[in-house]
Each structure stands twice: as C-alpha cells, then as structure tokens.
Image (cartoon, rainbow, N blue to C red):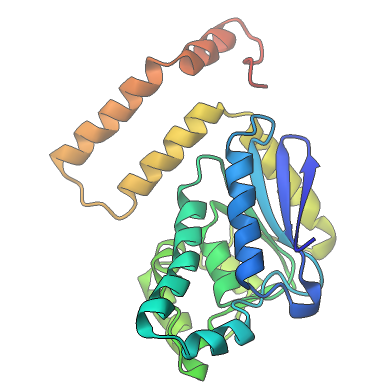
Length: 257
C-alpha cells in the first residue's frame, strides 16, 4: 500500500508509505491522498486526521522522475499537472476536520508544503525542513501561500530563497512547528493533541476551520465584523451548541464525546 490508514481512537492516521523513495509525491500517492480525504470526510468515527510518514523521511517532496517528465510537457499540460498538488494543499487547508502533521524526519519541498497546510504540527527534534527548489532552477510556487501563513512573510522569504535547512527546534522557535519533542515522545504528543481535538464538537471544528480560512490575513473591516457575528449566530442556532451548553450546565460530557 502506498498510503496506509491506521485507526487510533478518534483519529485516522494517514501513513505515506513509499519509504524506498523517502515518501516522494508521485501521481499514485497524490491520488491515494485525494481518495482518503474523500472517504474520511463522511466518516463520523474519524474526528481528526494525522499525516505521517514511514521510513527515514516524512516526505522528500515531489518525485524527481515526475518532475523531469513534467518538464517535457506542453505548458498547458504542465499547469494541469501542477494544479493537482495545488488543489491537494487547498483541500488539506480547508478540510472540515483538523489535520495534524507528525514529522519524524526530513520534510522537503512539497513535503514541507503538506506540513504548512496542516492545522497543527508536531515534530521530532531530529526532523528538519527545507525548500531546495531554487537550487535546481524551480520555484516552490504552490507551497508559498501556506508557508507565508505558517511562519510569516519574513521567515518564508529567507527559507524560500536560500533553500537552507530549517532544524525542528528552530522551526518551533519561529512558530512553524507547534510542538518539538524527542523522537521517543512523538506519538504520545500527537496522541494528546488528537484527544484534545476530539473533545470539541465536530461541527464547531468545521465551522472554526472555515472561519479561520476566511479571516486569515483579511483586513479588519465592518464587513468582516458582520461575517464573524453571523458565524457565531449560526453556530448558536445549531443543535450541537445547544447540546454543548446543556451538557456543561448539567455537568456531563456532550454527546459527541
């Protein structure tokens, strides 16, 4: 299997499983991820998704054989080919369920893009990140919007242009990684985050992710204020909010827990 799905409580762990290729992204792996996202979106038992990698690397980026093949395509076909990964990143960012990136080793190029598009990132101290595209005459184009949002424009400018490696501890210091832990504690740290996320209402999480997508980088305007007020009003009118408030007052767990 090029992508293994493992169930751990309320979380579905998606294991990139091309260890011999350092989990490089090819057409088959992208298709497998697209299919998994489709299936798990309607799976009420899967409250959280975890992206992880088998073997020594989390993900080494795009498969170079695929890149070489794309270089010989017409520009129109090359744009269509590149748009698949762009759509995958957007699907990941806008996915209605929280996505946690479990990074145990190198996450380069497109692999760093997967991490940047995730909601939460937990990395082992040995992990590292890099965008080596400019060193081989390429541009980390589809990754760039997520990178800027994940680490800020100034830091993104540095690592996008230089291609230098970003160790996990430094990535944590600049805010790209949420938690940096010893390798032996990685799964436990991811598990704790999944447990916390599973305590939240699934509709509330989906609404919150949609709201974050809207307000992220948006200018502060009266229109935005109205949109945020509308988001709260719609949530309060829902059955999940009524159950959540009632369970709090009755000192019991809500039905989704």
